[in-house]
Image (cartoon, rainbow, N blue to C red; front, side, top):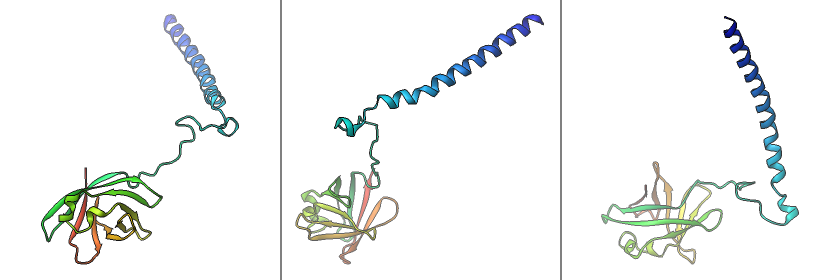
Length: 155
């Protein structure tokens, strides 16, 4: 019984000492790290990666879409690419997309409108198609009205 009490008391003292030392060690960690990060304004540089990183919105990452023309029964793949401005992205449709919709291969800009619709336009700003969000990862054509097209994001 005496050995049991000795083991119990040594374990309790060791646990308490470890807890105190660990709390002191953890308490100093962030202060030491904060002192090592240089002030980017003072040194005239950009902060290291991960420090004060800007928040990047992943609302519409680059993606590949399948464009289907239901009346012509034709399909092609298009790409929504890099960000150009806060509302527009690069857009690419290969030449075979002309069989899906005339002028689609000339579209180079994907613009997100304030009402949630998307306008595909040429390099000169001429609209080719106006899309509205459908179910899940799809878009349906709103303008021109005679277009029976849908865009579905390819995984």
